[in-house]
Amino acid sequence: MIRPILKMGSPSLLVPSRPVTRFDTPDLHALVTDLEDTMAAADGAGIAAPQIGINLQVVIFGTGAPNPRYPDAPVVPRTVLVNPVITPLGEDGEEGWEGCLSVPGLRGMVPRASRIRYAGYDPLGQAIEREVDGFHARVVQHECDHLWGILYPMRIRDMSKFGFTSVLFPQLEDNTGD
Ligand code: NI
Image 1 (cartoon, rainbow, N blue to C red):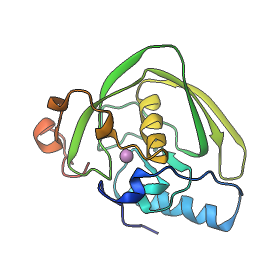
Image 2: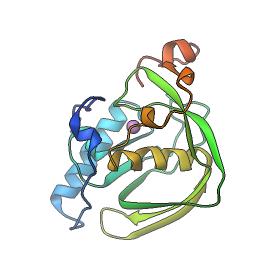
Image 3: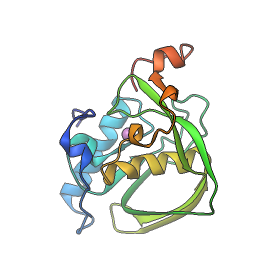
C-alpha cells in the first residue's frame, strides 16, 4: 500500500529506530511491501521505514533500472536491508548531490565516505554483506542515516550548495519532487 511520506519537521524522522527482532513475519513483509509501493510511486532511489512513520531499522534502495530522478546515476541492485551496520573503508570521502523524499523539491551537496562495507539481513533473516563505492555507497549511507534520525541537510557543509531542484537542475524532466 502506498503510504504518506513524512516530511522534514516530523519528530519521527529525528529519532533512532529500533532493530527488527523477528524475521519472516507477516508484519515485516507488509512493511517491506508498503515501502516498495511508496518508493515506486515517488520514483525514489531509496526509502527508510521511519519515512512512513515506522521506527524500525528497515531500508530499501535500488531499482535495478535507471532512475528518472537520477538519470545519470549507476544502477543499484534492488535491496531490502534490515538492521544495517556500515563501516567506512579507508579515509576517502566525496561530495555529491542528494535529494530526499522527506525533503521535497530540494537538493544539497553532501559529504559521504567513498567506499563502505555494509552488513545486515534480508526480511527472511539471511545475512547480506557487500563492499561498494560511489553512488551505491552514497544511497546506503543516506538511507541508513534515516535510521539514526539524521536527514541529509544536517550533513551539508556548504549551505550555498543547497537549493531547489528546479533551479539547480532545470534540465531534469521530473524536478518537482525531491
Ligand atoms: Ni531520504
